[in-house]
Length: 95
Image (tube, rainbow, N blue to C red; front, top):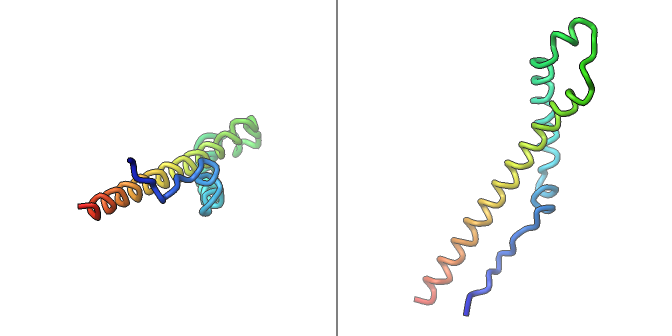
């Protein structure tokens, strides 16, 4: 008989949208996206032109996605640590 794990794995949606992840990802995207926009398109902007809008949008989307993915993988790693710790404790109780 396998022991039931009382620590339920959070869904992907929970990991993405809970715990302040969207807010942190938004702020990261605004800062990093602005720096990258200036690095990648600063010469065009300073010359009075506007780069293609999809390129600027991607410049902001990438740091948002990377921050979100980092948060999700961190939450998954924490869940694995908690479940491993719980399994260890329940096995040592049986001994």
